[in-house]
Length: 157
Image (tube, rainbow, N blue to C red; front, side, top):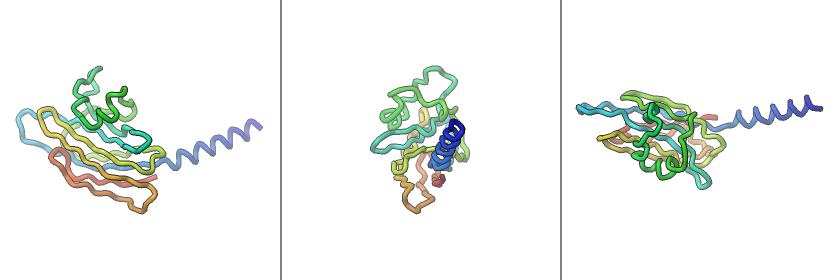
């Protein structure tokens, strides 16, 4: 009986995790020809009526207290000030280049995806789009802004 219970539990867990929604976010951080260039902070998060979920956060991870996180204004107001950033999604700032990140959005099916990019002594960009896993749209394309190039979002499971 115990073996059957373990087998059923394992199958249930496997079926739940196999259906977790993912997004692949492809974007470019442009290069600037300013003398005092600082790598940008990047935050990607989902907002739904029920919850907000940080999916990616690049910041100065070498510091115990990163006082500049407050500069990622929208993310800070919605998520950051309420506790520590989740360890699994944080990373160090990155310089100019093309990036592709696959993000686990769990069981969220309808939400707004936000991408905020901020540079010290630089500019700020905030772009967003609604995502709905119940529709047939697989690709989303968001226009470039001053601090971020064009963004492609691909839904997956």
